[in-house]
Image 1 (cartoon, rainbow, N blue to C red):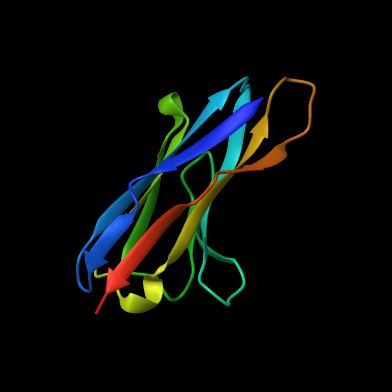
Image 2 (cartoon, rainbow, N blue to C red):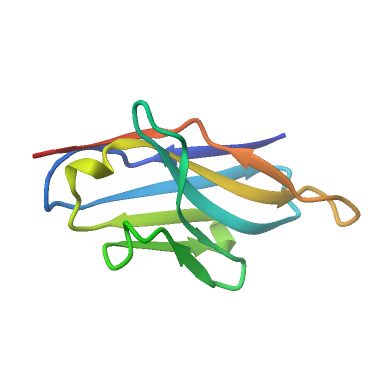
Length: 121
């Protein structure tokens, strides 16, 4: 069984910064894409950023230039550095990952439990 556990959320003032982390554990053969999503009250979950195993990144327009996604493949961990935070960044942030547990298997998408990020004005 695979688990994704997020950490690092919290309360910060506008203009501040936070870094959230997500570590995958369990039986893992390989991790392909890892990503961060967020869900604000009354809104749909949206992609914030994702990163391939090779390090190629993709960002939502709303966070480009402010957020940076990175990963440590040796630790099966993905990070999201969030700078110049705005009140509209307030949401529950979820990580997900495409994980294969054996060589002859398919990638399965797993989700973390979410971590709250609140940006005060």
